[in-house]
Length: 307
Ligand code: PMV
Image 1 (spheres, rainbow, N blue to C red):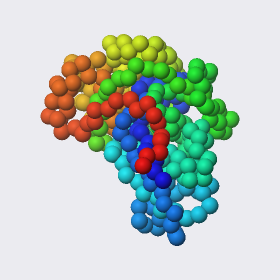
Image 2: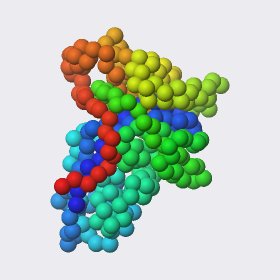
Image 3: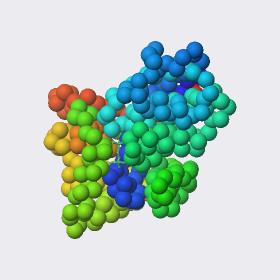
């Protein structure tokens, strides 16, 4: 059995979501494929599993309750550690396939087990990535109420509500700075910024307001407005200290050819999302800077089985 799972971008609200503010994420049409076959011994990509290299897949296998050994094979069309949710995509694909083999397939169950897997491996996580790539389309995640609730996920007394947003499809360019930012390190950097600065929580709340204000323009396909909110959100992320010269350089060099551009995910390098006004010019700039990029569209389906 095989599952195909999209990657994701965070459109608005990263970091603020850690403090309970809403964030908006979207599944994109870059995919990982996980296939599982019965096997005499547990194997991952033809080798015995090693927790150091296969921590997500191995934990996903353990949490999916499949009773027999299997051979799990993974292919991915996008780079790991680029802020596009590769660990979530592979985790969700593994859980989906193993639940399918047990006749227990349900997106809600996949989202929960996958979140538990990420939490166990990383020691910290919000369910943003795992829920987005499971569901497909665009989602809002919040500790407050959301419309069109898909499911809620609880951990350590915190409840996250995940709701679907029916957005007009947008086409983005994702540019990867090639610098790897550590999510855990950046989350703690923001935490010390917020505790040390009187206006720290104001910035967090302002980002939350941007996510709320982005819902209508996203549903209406108001590209100008979406772009200007991206620019604002990015300024606030820079104030929080998660910018990096490599991402700032990309954002500055495409700004006159785009409606907006911002860091996506944890920052400190990682990837940038660009809403292009003149696509060819943006691409020309990225190629000149030798930046790896992907043209992406929204994925509507989320995780699914394939032949
Ligand atoms: O690095 P990513 O794409 O998984 O994004 C992290 C997003 C944060 O808000 C910084 C952390 C989180 O768990 O939500």
